Length: 161
Image 1 (cartoon, one colour):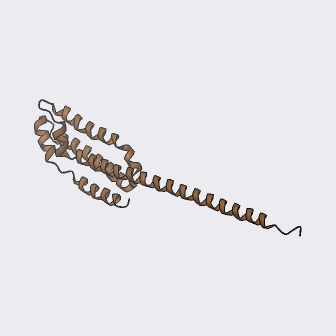
Image 2 (tube, one colour; image 1 turned 135 degrees about the vertical axis):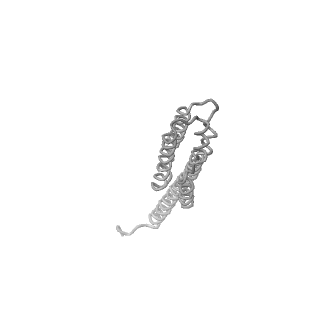
Image 3 (cartoon, helix red, strand yellow; image 1 turned 120 degrees about the vertical axis):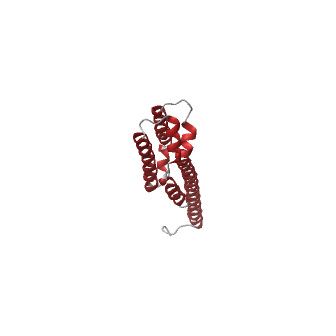
């Protein structure tokens, strides 16, 4: 009878298995909750990134940008510098948002920024003698053709969260 386990030993083995299983399942449940919390946190960050990028795009819309930047008495070169600087500063302020949106959306945001800078420079180059007030009106009336397309792309990215 040396190889036969006593009833007490079997009870201890069963209790050990139940305790181990309980601890294992409890640990998995806790890990699952942490994963869920991380997923929720990332989703919140993605939502905020989408919001911030849409806000950035709306802030660089020419009609909005000119209203914010133009001040009576500015020179044309001051207006050009201020418009470009504002677009660039706003972009740099939102660089971290690229972590939370698709690469496609981020590249569209970059292209929109570049197009806006190019359009401003071209408008000033085409009107070298124009005063700041005239240039402000000219630029405010120009379309930002990519903004609406990029906002749609951001919305699509947003709905995949």
